[in-house]
Amino acid sequence: MVSHAWAIHPGGDPVTDVCGMTHRNRYLAAVRWRCAVLAVFAAIANSAEDAVLHHTIAHGLPILVASGEYAAIGKALGTAQLPTIHAMLAVAGGAPVPAGDPRLAAIRPGHRAEITAAAQAAGVPVAVLLASHLVIEPRCTAVFVPATAGRPAAPGRPATVARNMDFGPADLLAAATCLHVWRVPGSRAVAGVGWPGFSGVISGMNDAGVCGCVLLNFAGNPLPPGEPLPLRLRACLEQAGNAAEAAALFTARPAPGSDHYVLFADASTAVLAWWTATGPQTERAVPGTVLAVDNEPRGTGERERRLRALVPADADETALRQALTAVFLKGINAQSMVLSPANRELSLALAVGPTPASHGSWRDLKLAPWFAGHAPEPGQVTVRAPVKPLTHYTEGPGAP
Image 1 (cartoon, helix red, strand yellow):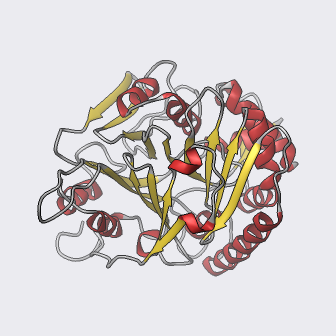
Image 2 (cartoon, rainbow, N blue to C red):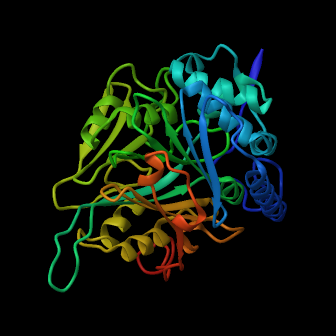
């Protein structure tokens, strides 16, 4: 007996991706998918009696605020996102995963209950939806910039995290992107930038302003099977009151089943954490300096070096957005975002067809009302124009 995980992989042929579709066909599919998402979310009312689900579409972004126990949340989200869960599984195909895979057994009971209920409500095999949390391999960049004090000529800026989420097929992942806010009694509220049916966190923030971002680690070595990393990150955010607490939870045994980097940040500092065969590793931001991360061994990556050069410690938000245009991976820049821990704010840009996310317009979202359980409204999300892009790190003087 085998189940199937989503076979969405980074990179791939520029003309034909892993799903066997041409770029044009994928783009057209993304347009149809987005239209279906809008129609479904506009029509569906709260569908679970034992959970409170508020949802809206704001400038093309589905926002879902779900309050209740894990299983109740899963039932509500699975019902509301039924068509898009089916579409995601159908488009992405499947890589076999044994039904007895120990990584599936390592999923925490609450998260398992949520995913199980979502699968049952959506009418998809439970093993398939569980396995979909095993295959996320984001090739990304991220940078933490410390807070700056105000000056007579310029206001201060809170600590900020900027990141690209590079993963393919970018147009489909961008078209299917949604924002989940999970509110489970006894846990911190957590917002995750993700996709229908996905209960883990790749990029997110909790109600204490603790951010977490996953980045692929090219230098890593396989670890013994363990808890899927996106669910481990969500569990950390459900408990942590600051970045240090989140990193401590992440590096506590047993180890997760992945050696990827996770950047934790709050309004004061940032900690990069990851696991190796010999145990957990951490790197803390030096006070007053930026902490830049790419997918290479620490201190060796070209994109990490470029971020350090482009982003001084007093960089403003425009400079951060521009820096993202210089370090994305071509063809798979699905999402770009800027997170402000102190203000509980998220700015999100998404790829549109061949246009990379970092070159697109930005949706500014205030998360605090949704962390408190208030219903999202389209007027709470504003849009700002794209920034002027910088020279890509693969082009111009000094290109690798």
